[in-house]
Image (cartoon, rainbow, N blue to C red; front, side, top):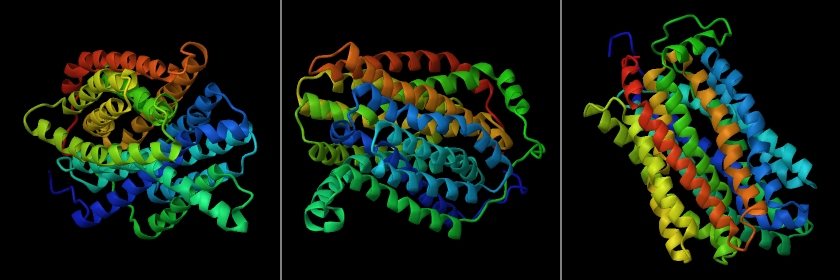
Length: 437
């Protein structure tokens, strides 16, 4: 590290990461809490599995993906903290707005607004963390940030179960809520914390100095990003495609695993939330924190392709543990497979953040991260939810159809991700960027 690089105070930097991690957790909570509400929503709004897959996938990912690139370009050139705070407020308010939807179309629109707000999160957070931490500590900060995904997913399960219980008490105990359905109250309770956090962010987080900027960013242009991809096609292409294929499996877990336990194993919705949250939260948080340390350790030992190795481990976990969890006949065994897979799932997203920071210059990181967000939204989030719902409605139509629909996604996408990432390891090593930037 040269003397030109003056990094923010470490304690304050970790405070910022804690807020970003909480924002990520709330984003995932607001994004996926709908998965535990599948039965009441289908009953009240008369929607089928395919439509529910669209609500979880396309409705959210449409604007989440399309806006990712312009927001990435914006965060590479302007103040990132106000942009992130505004996005957080919008997606939280939109989540609360889902409670007032009377039809599939209205709920689809509210979910689109959630996607609009969340589109600002990853580009802004990834860019901010890169400027708060030196390259040696950065993977650990990204690993901590990724715990927000684990917290949000587990909270979506556990808190949605808790909120269902609270909603029942509110409906039966207070006239104000007597005309509301339980799922409406759950959406309101999920959105409220984000409104408060958006105020905390704008009031307490300082915009850091950009580190290692090599060229002017005054003009909006995709030319530098396209030139970067031209120079490093296999390195960037394999990292992005392989991790996106992994994310197809991740979104299938988030969107449909509650339905697996409810439909196939006969659990109640609240019970499913409690158990999946209790099992998934500690394991996933450990894995997310561990992922950053694993990548840092591998890099220190000379593995310049450490992010690729972490993503490969996640892909193999999907093939083995993910598929196992779907097809075993006992709920207890399915839960074991779910827990074992959770040990590696978050290695994938840590690999994305660390890998992009490693082979992309500072002034392009937000845009490249936004491109990954576009791919993960249009491909992973949409496909992971839609394919499972479509297969369940049209191919595996029996009582246990959700099991085979999920298993096919895990095995096929996990295997494809493994092959793609293995093919790109050498190119990634050759493209490693200056680590002092």
